[in-house]
Length: 192
Ligand SMILES: CC(C)(COP(=O)(O)OP(=O)(O)OC[C@H]1O[C@@H](n2cnc3c(N)ncnc32)[C@H](O)[C@@H]1OP(=O)(O)O)[C@@H](O)C(=O)NCCC(=O)NCCS
Image 1: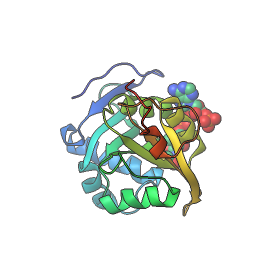
Image 2: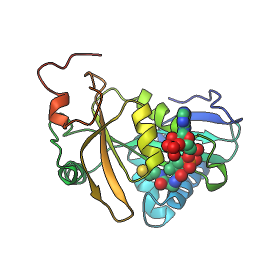
Image 3: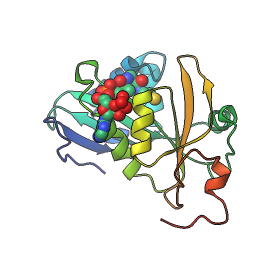
Image 4: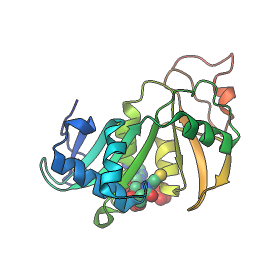
């Protein structure tokens, strides 16, 4: 699945599977993710992690130009997911298999152009099952909220800053405000 609708600022948006990118583009995405600091390690370390993502959203300067933004829906390890919910003190019920929105990064010389919201929105629009995200970025927190994610549990201290846990469940009504996940799956919840 891929496409190149205009995303604003003269950029083209690409959406699809990491495996569908050329090797040069795959390496460019890995370089970008490395520069963003979401994964420590070399590009060679990062490539296999990106291959395991389910979908990617990219922003590039023209259809074949430089890749300047990326975000992904990834399938984390079970113990990593459990750790995130445990850190937040939130129930994982309904999110035991949830993919995670992450690896959102905008190239340094393209920051401040409101591109991160577009990336988050593109991925959120493709989510059809319970999913989660964790972030220590205030900008990301705002983008997640704009895209329908809800903050759950309690924030905790990560290595780089205060982390918060966010969830989205497209099959359920997400009540406004900060809730425990279990409340989202309460008996009164209904389909959107
Ligand atoms: C985090 C990061 C992706 C944000 O991108 P950015 O280019 O710096 O920020 P943007 O220009 O997209 O956002 C600027 C403001 O516009 C807002 N904005 C962005 N897109 C928007 C949209 N579509 N509609 C409305 N507002 C929008 C943002 O919320 C932000 O305001 P805020 O900080 O008050 O919340 C970027 O700084 C980055 O790559 N950092 C390194 C990697 C990283 O930390 N990633 C997050 C990991 S969880």
